[in-house]
Image (cartoon, rainbow, N blue to C red; front, side, top):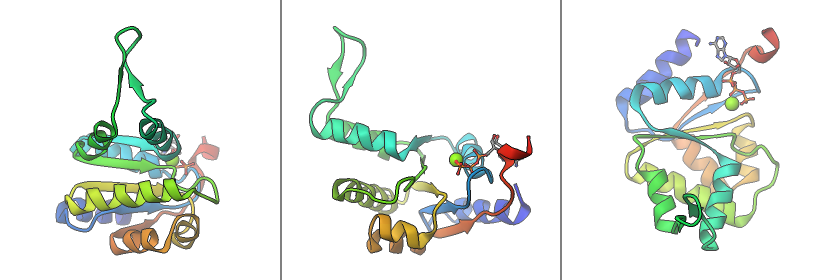
Length: 163
Ligand SMILES: Nc1ncnc2c1ncn2[C@@H]1O[C@H](COP(=O)(O)OP(=O)(O)OP(=O)(O)O)[C@@H](O)[C@H]1O
Ligand SMILES: [Mg+2]
């Protein structure tokens, strides 16, 4: 990790007041790797937006279940919200991999950001699109919340190709 990025990430965690921390940059520059290091340090977990949004939709429909039949049980919406609120750090990775998002997905992401930020709980967002793109895929209020936190643009070569 470049020293400048390391310092900025550390400063955000030390200040613990300017969430979310958003990592932007092209594929393969190491955004997910940085987030994994943060989780290693402070605890928590990483979710991939499209998978987690599917869980949310299932929970909305009352179709989300946990466990193995016949001992499986329904997971309620408050339960899934609890899973996003309880970790000391939540990393939301692969945001806006598609150009468009539904209103339901936008509302969910908006609430997720607001609930974590209002509770002053560490939140890292990751995308390989620009802040403007995030505004057009989701909404101006979401872009504003991201801009109001700390945004780090990570540039460099695709490390997947370097191997
Ligand atoms: N500092 C580093 N030094 C060497 N290899 C690294 C470093 N950071 C990440 N890598 C490796 O480079 C590859 C890409 O990293 P990573 O998955 O974090 O990229 P990314 O920015 O999240 O990409 P994407 O936007 O496609 O998800 C991974 O295989 C990772 O292990
Ligand atoms: Mg990644």
